[in-house]
Image 1 (spheres, rainbow, N blue to C red):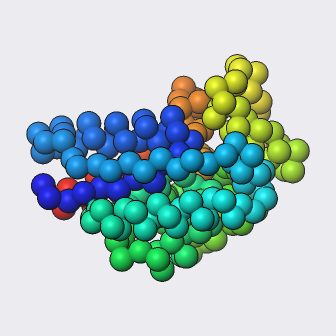
Image 2 (image 1 turned 30 degrees about the vertical axis):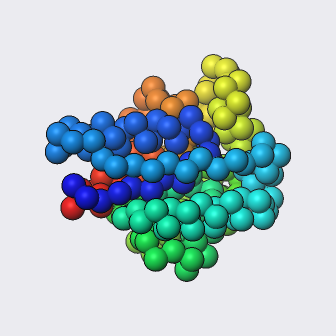
Length: 227
């Protein structure tokens, strides 16, 4: 296999490392060879991370993302994956600056939901992801409705995401998220629209499909890199 995978990391470093390891191991199982992976870990400040998650704008993110895409292009990677939902607000600009294909976690998630024939989904994601309509706009193209938390609950979700990044979560945080999910009326699935959420909510038992956006991107990446 001659394809090279480029990963833009640092947008939740622990999650990104898990993504890299999982893709590596799954490809090795498929073809008995480890893939060539180049991980570019961005030096994002905690201040910028908190600002973006809570709905603010971050020129720091965009500048570092563009620099990373440029580096990975110069290293002749075959495809680029960015395991972070929120920074996909910049995907159009990043694609304009890249001759290498950049996978979209948002587009791949919408395709997965369509494949599962889901019609109405609850969304747990950062405030920025929710407010910009990243998932809801994409899912609307497939005739899928999205339900989001009220403003108070949404503020808590963003706070919880930052706690996950800092490894300061508690069982009480998980219990409140379950209560938030129960406020979503008439849903037939849940999107974990932040790549840091699945490792915190790995043992949820909701009796409805849980769409793990990290896993969706993993599968799309593996398919692309092994074809």
